[in-house]
Structures are given as structure tokens and as C-alpha cells.
Image (cartoon, rainbow, N blue to C red; front, side, top):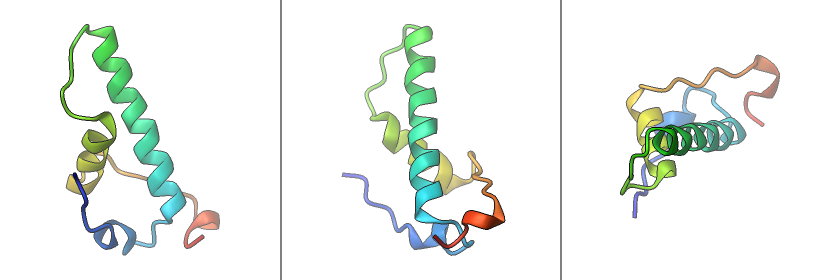
Length: 69
């Protein structure tokens, strides 16, 4: 089970809501791309999306109004 330390991501004043929403959005994109290309992915799309966010390959930009919700 993939259980990363999310405090690293959240220390940049990123809200948990934005993290969850962005992870779900990216996971859907990954699943749709795999389906369009007729690829079989063995790893869960949510895990792949979270790895991309943690590594900095996928950047979350959120408005100032919703930070620290």
C-alpha cells in the first residue's frame, strides 16, 4: 500500500481539498489515456497520480481564496 508523507506536499499552503481534487482529476486522465491507447496498466491510477504530484511532474495551482481550508 502506497502511504506517502503528505506533509511535504501540504507545507506549501496547499489545502487538502485541492490535493484530493487534483489527484482524482489526474487519475481520471491517466485511466482515460490508457483506455484510448488500449494499454493495460498494472498500477492504480490514483497511486500513479499521487507519485506524479509528489515528484513535481504534476503541479497543483490553487487560488488564494481556498488555501488553508
